[in-house]
Structures are given as structure tokens and as C-alpha cells.
Image (cartoon, rainbow, N blue to C red; front, side):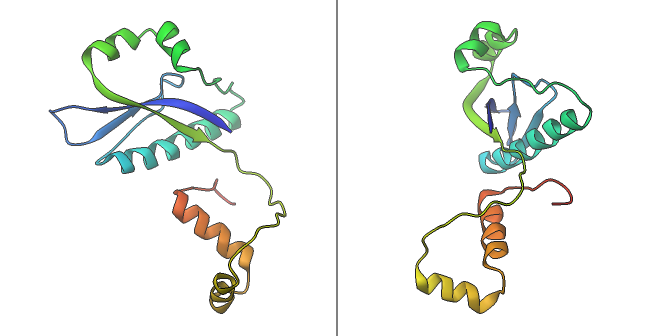
Amino acid sequence: MLRYIALFETDEYSDGVGVVFPDIPECVSAGDTYDEALKNAHEILADIIEEKKSNGEEIPTPRTLEQIKAEWKDWAEWQNNYTFTIGYVSYIPDAKPKKYTIMLNSGLVARIDAVCRNRSAFLSKAAEMLLDYKPAEGK
């Protein structure tokens, strides 16, 4: 998993929230709300990293906030001219399924069994929906 610092920009002149990744300059996103901007940021980050991987390009190593403040050429401009919140957006690469042992309420398992035949597929889909996780194409 890679955790990148993202700057979530708001201002009095626009209604939305913009997102910039100092470590990946071409990775820019936005949304009408903070939640939408965060969801879109996860999607664009995954798309850009997957594209870089498929093109054989180097994946930037995430920097700490201290490193960004010291090394990112645009930090002073952002700090002095923009209203923003600092957050983290993670890239979690898709992997092959792996068997896990988990504990669940037996009543919950009975309800799952009543609506599907495959608990693993049901729980995977529910987790994807709840976490706004977008699996890579073809998965």
C-alpha cells in the first residue's frame, strides 16, 4: 500500500473541492463535496499508478509532509495563497484472493446465506461498496 499526501483545496469563489498530489503532478481531481473529492481522488490515483505500471514507468515514492514542505517547489505558493486541508489517499494494488478466518455474528451469516450462495463474493462486494473501492478492470 502506498499513502500519498493530497491537498484538498476550497475557496470562496467555487463550490467544489479540488485535489492535488504533490508527489504526482499529473494526478489532479475534484468533487462537489469533500466526500466526492476523496472518492474521485482514490480513483484517479489508482488509474494513474496502474497506467504508469503498464507503461513501465517509475511509481513515485510517497514523501512525508516535512519532505513536501522542504522539496516541493509549489509549497510556498500553496501555503500563502490557497485554503486547503492536508489528507492521505492510499493506493492498494489488486491482489489474488487469499483465504482468511474471520468471526461474524451467526445471525448476520444467516441473512447473508438467505440472499446469496457465495459468502466471499458477497462480503467482497459489500466491502468494495462501503469503501468506494474500484477494482482494476477485468477483476
